[in-house]
Length: 145
Image (cartoon, rainbow, N blue to C red; front, side):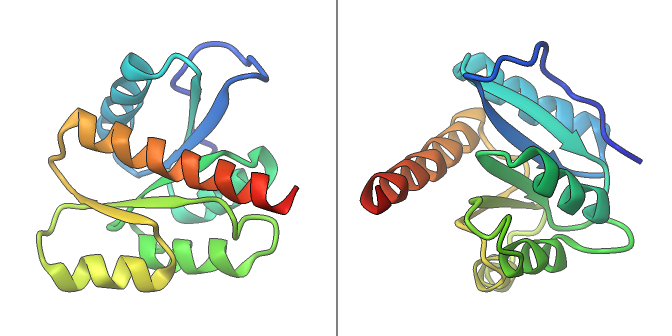
């Protein structure tokens, strides 16, 4: 099932952020946090790992927010698959977990995530992670140009 878009409009100048999470309320909270702070973002979502991978391939978002605990395929496997695919490997992934276990954060980094936040997180922390992810992509683009 394809997730619904949670921000209005399809402005090509806006950077797409893909949220992959099976919990609609958490998608809405993350989307609200991002769009309250950054008007240049368009938030799209997917409700499970497989549709998230497909959406990442077709939409080519600027960054991905990925929940760790999802049915069928967990976020670690989703991240590994995204990083193994040439069409999605350069998209930064920020993972979200409900656990404060540092081993889970390490597992997120090993899967290819650029950051791992523990839920509940502060709105500013999520926005800062996305800002840093977008800035690193921009720096890499400038270096390769």
